[in-house]
Image (cartoon, rainbow over all chains, first blue to last red; front, top):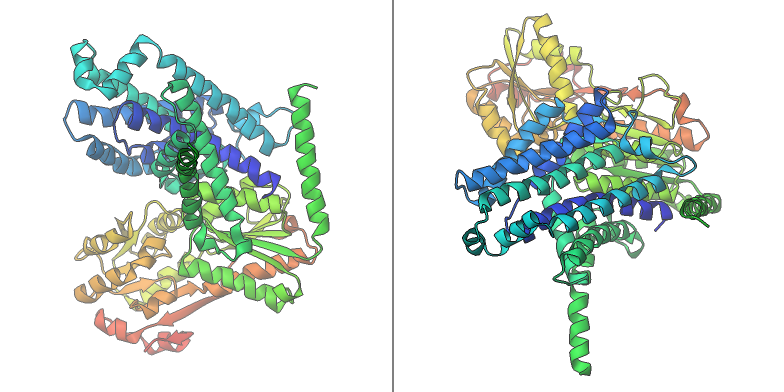
Length: 295
Length: 322
């Protein structure tokens, strides 16, 4: 594996770690199976791309992308909380609606950003190659996001949100507006995914309508890989584990792309990735068994 | 030593490593990527391989050939682009828009030849159709739509309304629909659109056109081509002439198609690759469109769909499907 493809894996992994943090909030903290992500990730990319394309400031465009995606999350939450539509179905409805909305936002299936300025070209320090600068900028952003989430979930509101997910009846008995907590949580979760989409479009040369396919699967995989390599009940550790999980997943893909020397072909890529992730998930179990045997 | 200088050293070290790699690789290397495996895109890949072989670049003589598909996933497309740039091949061939954009975004120095992109200028792969002056050149699969309209006229002379089924999520199709919307009225016809976002929607979209159109025209839309049989079924039962723009669809039940042969498109792409391997600069080479279009006709399908093909048209066809 070349240095270049490792920096690339780190870069894309860090972008998807924002998705993983979002998925952590919906699936784990709120206990809300949310598939909106497959639509809010491209919504973020679409919003950022079209704004930058029309000459807007890339930072403003990225902020707008997070807001738009956050709003999509609120709609999912609202369908569930106020209209009493089952959580999974509510998110599916918003996800499919977003396909059309994203086409409307871009007014085309593909908006290129190869020649426009992006947050990465603006922030890139002189004397540093772009493929090194991008992951480093993203590392700072992801660490900031992780730190903000850690802080938020220790505040009064954050704790109320966690209790909403783990025991809604108890939370309501304590006077917590669980409905509002769901709306807020879904907004934060999807805003993170939209942010990831905005960064992805800016680092990969443009937004494409197909960029959302499978986002939720990758996000969930990252969360589960993270939880199994760094099991903990402390949120500070869990958020770190999830970020690591997302980066690790991308390294597995990079590794799978280099598996041609053992006679594997291009079409085997997804299979190899699945096998590598399975191995990573089984390792802790094997370790446990070995320890038991020794004891 | 502060952090930024450590990083700069890391960057130089990695640049050095890749330079050494490039120096050690005496043999020519070509890396090919496409967004998804698909009959037309696969023929492009095979065409490139054949063109290289004809020019004497074979694996036996030390050509390093590498092929990766992104399995339809843009994040994987991005990672493949990174891997290729890290491998430092002599030429990267990128098939279809998302793959080409990922590669062009990842390198400003390694020569890139795109293929099967309908509008490379709108996709920002090249600033114009002229020689780009950058590291990018390639072959577009854009069709001269005037000729397509003419073909519709020849097959259904009194057509007033032409229907099109397409995927609004596919850049290549949207380009064609936009142009047809302006082009058809010039020949006294209007366009009726029906969108199919997934392959399973193609049949329903075609049925929505029944009674509203005098002919159905299809572009090289991936969804439509994948589910072409469901379109043929509707055309046959409602007797609406079906005209395609890829020649393979004629065998599957379209009356006619004046189309790009994707294998030839791959050959043409491969010839650009060969020129770069021989030392030409991609920035000096203008983007090309397919040099050859072929007419395929299917008289049996015409009969089923209620029209007869003129002798002249059948005579000009490159292939008549029986």
